[in-house]
Length: 293
Ligand SMILES: [Zn+2]
Image (cartoon, rainbow, N blue to C red; front, side, top):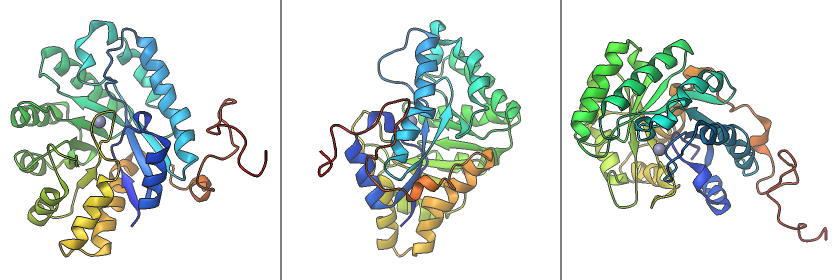
């Protein structure tokens, strides 16, 4: 099984996770820029975070045989903090960089006017930079938030096939399918979507324009939920080719619209595990490898 996790926050995960993901078949990921839990107080914190996603984290993933991409944006929650609005001015510089495969994650958190203003501006930026966009739907008032999100996408005029609406469930998937956007599902350990519900949704609406992700971050989550969904699909009678379509070819098709996927990078075949390579003088090694000391 080859797996492309289209939404996972590796910055908050360990090297054990990278090793387990590689062993399960994960060969590529997209890490969306998001809220860090601790509120940021200046634009500089975002700049360093964005640089970390595109630099250090991509290097770290490469040491475990995984191609790492990012989406860049001002997240919905911090769109409400006036101290963070200057991020909109630095985004154009980041939206031109290699490995940046979409604007995201944008969307609604509490559905405020400030969130809407920032969402509209970032949808426009996606158009200006010819990038797809990844939209998060709120955890509260999900149906109303999804409906309003789709209205705004339509008003801004982005082609629906370049828009991914994420964190969907049984109540919101039809709205997104009817709009012609891509449908994203985050499969979590004990809340929201689980792998059996995910398979039931696939059986009902088919395998077109659907992405399955673990959305693993610093909260309770499981970076192998993509793999477990693949297993649940096989147990439900789907073929290996069906699983490959959902877990690999669909994310490649969606994020490939950026023209910036890094999948031909020779490092994917590199020795797995921390190597002697370094990133600005920093390595993943802690002491000399056994046998060389
Ligand atoms: Zn996320």
